[in-house]
Image 1 (cartoon, one colour):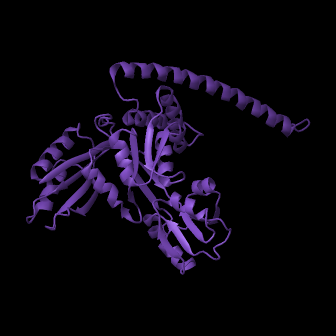
Image 2 (tube, helix red, strand yellow):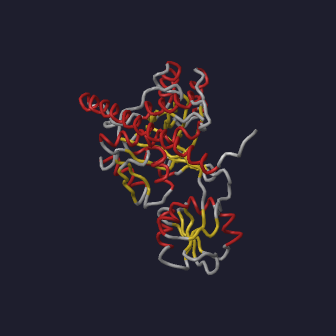
Image 3 (cartoon, rainbow, N blue to C red):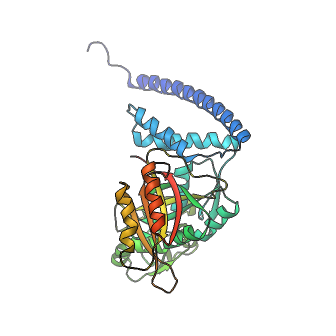
Length: 368
């Protein structure tokens, strides 16, 4: 290379200028997309169809991931386009989404990750209230935790799915990082640690090693524990960094969960009268709750139709029926959609051998 070296500041300014130009092109294209979305919204109004179709958004994101040639990571495509679709939906009407509050909970994070930030947030004080708000029409959708990789199922959510009319129309999974939060920047003098019972259980080993004398005090949610800890220097909370920012707390100890791969699965629930079952996408899950007669071989008979028709079972949980007769409900997830012939045949035969049978929902699942 001959001649004087290029001025790095000038090169940086030139690149920034090109980025600014691309940003303006992107903005123009996004507004073009928004106008098309408005036209779609007008058609939906005339036809009376829902604003949000999870299967359509899943297909859009899957198609973009498949078409992505980089250097943008495919994992980055989904959150970018969820925000774009969220902003476009809001031009028609912002979706009302209920979740376990207050601000800063993992449930709120899951809701924003699934629907995007252009929603009307409906924070609730309990999982029961999420179901009531969604059942009663105060919210279009609810977001509830159903399973944690460390502590297993969230029993209250399963019970409410059984006893309310709501159906599952989507799911999302969140990598959970628990942090010890406090007004003071150390663990000295902590009298009690506040968190949701699941979070306390997920951090039991760390608490036993580092704060063995501190009381473990259950809270309605992790963020509620953080809110209470913000008013009392003797308290600490287990919650997210979002909660730390929301309530002005120090992150005294980051990532204190006992399992480094701790994940929580959330269900997106809705009333079937307002939001029908999503159509098949080719990668769907169907959730059921069933019970079988109390006789030898009944559980085996329940599983036979799935095997005969080549339908994979991805989850199998039991819950007491509370009948006093040692009977159980079985919560089952299977791969596939009832519109698929093999799944329809398996479900038909399964229904015939069950004393109780309820489809909790069919919905698209994320393909990584």
